[in-house]
Length: 431
Image (cartoon, rainbow, N blue to C red; front, side):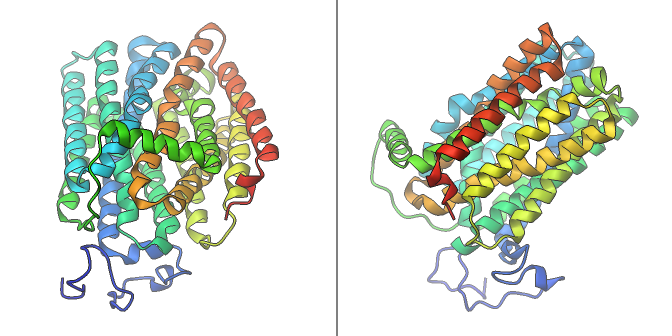
């Protein structure tokens, strides 16, 4: 492009480069604009493509959970499917982090997004032909989860590649906004689509949603990366572990994300059971409940986008985590749909504030050469421990009730987080 210096890596803009004026420029203003990372064109189109794709993914998530409940009527099967989809993050995230530091971003993203599109098509066809079984859903969920685990560290590292360091927190917050905006739109569309066109239509629409993202990935210019010293994958993996183990504050941040994942996030997997058995609101009510959590998460992302980079982030991580677990605990006690939706909104906003802030701390504190591997530990903590929690909550819910199982889980995590807040001054001091 003519407005870029030929001596710089692709995708890196000079401070002097004039940017085209866009609507609502005050929101994009450097340092003060809420959406300032969108000033960077390659990040902007990447953000848009992922937003469209995530709408489809949330439609599929809601429809898949409803399909499992219709086929089995069992919260245990919801937990099993959730375990199958999320367990690969525990098994493969660290390997994916090594790959993210060794492989071209574009090649990895194209491979993983194409695979997820093919899996969505397979699920759609089997459902449309009435040949789907819960065992097949488990297999497809496992394959999709494996692909997602391999994709996540590369995707997270790509965000940092497309913006200057000063805009990193804002870019992560905006990524959270698009993800959670899709979490509002997707489940709402899924509820109406299931009622009007059937469950298979949600899966077909998800497959279509990958096409814009694949097109965007072929167009985005990722910066040229520095040459790395030759080393084995095992050596790279050990180096990543050693770095996190030596930096105790980073280790505590990863552990906090793991607690959110294992003891709080299973509420999403159990949501069909709450909608059908506890609150009696049906498929459209399920979409409304999931969307409510998305609204809160969206507001949490907007709040993060408004923060200046020098704001103290350690207290934000801990305070938001405490709020998240408390909201989930109260949600388990509620039998009123409106109150439940409000509590889910609080939980969604608090979860985003905690987890996304940890992500921004890792992105800014960890050197580029090892960032993919440390981010893979963040991914493993965020996605990999949810299946363990889902399986545990599902098993306890089968014996007692879903609200009782989730209340025990979130209450336990609330106590653990309070202990960390009191006993970890290094986290509280983080800026």
